[in-house]
Image (cartoon, rainbow, N blue to C red; front, side, top):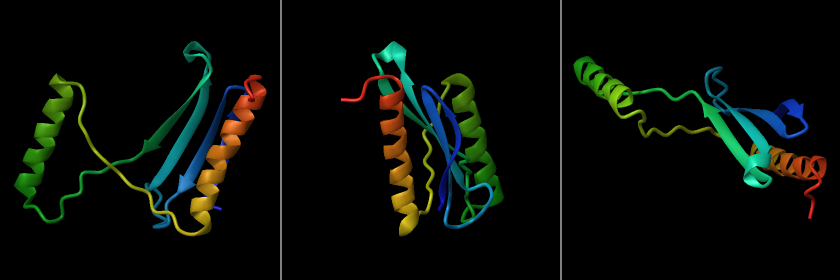
Length: 114
């Protein structure tokens, strides 16, 4: 199973998903919480390591791109990036089962099961 529960609280459940590429840095942490301040809304936070990979660029172009991104973070406060995680077969089912289980458990523990 590639998605495993790592922590559980009355209003939050945390999972870790391992990418099919099996690299240690290529995992995703999923935090599923029920926010009482938002009328019991379920929030899902995804944590990934995202790298600037530019094997096709010359080193100085890659460095310049990193400097531009650093300045954007410094002066604007955010950048857009994307990452991915590779799941196959049973791993996909495991991922969705984790989300469904967390939703059901959070609804039950807070008395919002409908």
